[in-house]
Image (cartoon, rainbow, N blue to C red; front, side, top):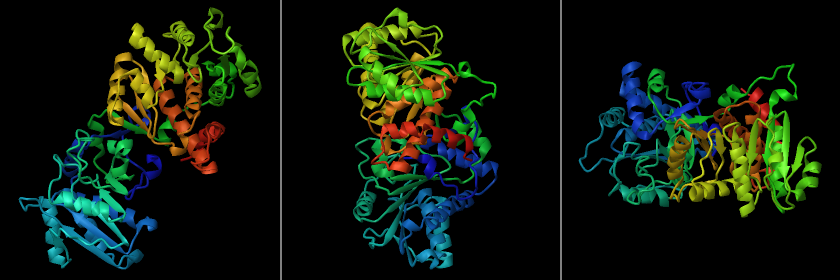
Length: 538
């Protein structure tokens, strides 16, 4: 899901996030958010009730700004805590807007816990309802959900520390069975936090159509295993105290257009092809020359000054015809690449290896030789079949991965490299450890690609779409990354910019060809459009 397209600011025209590396924006675990709320209340200063009003106002404005989801009936399901308080404020604001945008009915249901107590701010809003004469139900366990309704789930937010239990299990079941679109506030009720994601005890969870979170994307937005519950994520800016955001540490970040723009290096008008490095792409085998061709062409389109393709003899004519801009070196074997010391070129400034190499023993030896020859001297991108061989080398031969590498595995490749995982979140945490231990960068491919940096940070990409789940897409990324490294970008810069560019090219391709029909070649052909968008869009 493309977070960059879903970021919505109801209160300001620009997002006020702290600059970090390249301006990457901070994300926080759910347990940290209350401390930022408290810091804002104390430091702005603002009352907690008024901060709740501010937050709820962004939801109300978002609803009014999306005619496609605005129904005649809106049903508020408000729990006993501050999440319920948010829902009550939204309900009051919508009630006061009767008749606007077609709203004809707002039904408000308030639920108390077993102790029959509400949080102070939730109770304060009930008191406002009573003072203004706004109607609401209490503990109605058989609410009605007419077909033309939007259900607003404000039962429990991020403070939930245990499975829901009755009667809320039953209410969640009714919401999920209603067939109505659901808007969850902060997080779908029953989901819990990052420590409980995937816990089978948390079985009663609202399946939201949209989830609105405040100020920051949540880790739950980035995980495919939670898409059923989160739906489409939306983030609204509630102006939390910037100094508190700056002072609060995190290992999670996300990058968007502004970050890509900040990374791109300007070109001198006196530059020549030698100014932009020499890239080498080692790729291809019999029947797999398409992967090599796309990786090499992407490397050329990345802006690298000179690109050399190393291919088996069977791929010589293919590469010469398909990529007139690239030089071609042929290995000794007909159908696969065999290392030869004569291939080594000390002028090369970045190496990419893997697309379409094949998986025979001879190729594994070649992968080892290339990495040993160039490792520690220049940055290396290791992808596809080279990752397969790397996994074998590390496990069977205790092979030492050189520093300054970028690994680009999809989930199965990463599991082969490390161990099996049950979820995306588990893989992200393992990638974080792997990147630290090997002083390397791991690009864990997928929706909202997670980039694990050597210092322990995780950066999520915000570009791209489901149409990029097609053969050859990863080969294009390998070429892009190799070309950026050849031009002098650091591995961190190349990873953040390369993944962002790749996603933006995919977005441009989807716009032209649709997600269903687009191909990796379409992504390749849109790289120039992606560069143009980064350089010129605001």
